[in-house]
Image 1 (cartoon, rainbow, N blue to C red):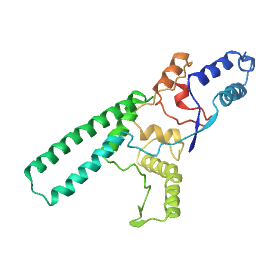
Image 2: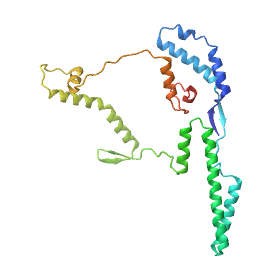
Image 3: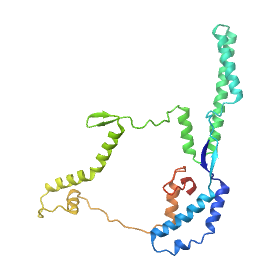
Image 4: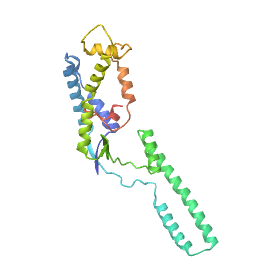
Length: 248
């Protein structure tokens, strides 16, 4: 048993219908961009939560759904024949067992192919589902064991607190290290300006290439649509809790 958001053609139609009834006066008539965005998001999420409710769903525990009752019976029959064949050197029985195993192997392959085709055809993300089935067939380990140990100053440690402190120290001291390197490089350059430690002066002499100017352009609806289309169809979401799959 697990919980999921109920998303189907009916709930999507209900959500779009509710949005169509909105006048969006607080959005179009506002002047403060922060107030405008918060107003839009509040209206959007209000209808989002009212249309897409969280429901209970039964999780299928059997991953090998291609194993039918007929295949189970054939496997038991194969095991019985194998037991008989261990103490029997009859060539006829041996040939029968070999042919039986060959036929059963073909049946299992065909059952897997049909089941995998069904998964791919019913999937919203064909590429992701295909790779998931390939990894399952290759018996890849999906478990993420996390970070086990880290070499810090020549010593290996598995203490999570020490590892966290080392990462924090590294990333918090990066700006100071960059500034020190810039100042050291500037000291080697002979200039007519004495005792000048401005950052603009340092960057100008450390980097010999010119930096392009940042130009801001108005965002179009087409650009937003292209960005949303480039997202992967998944159940992940941002801080607004809107699913990427629903946005697409």
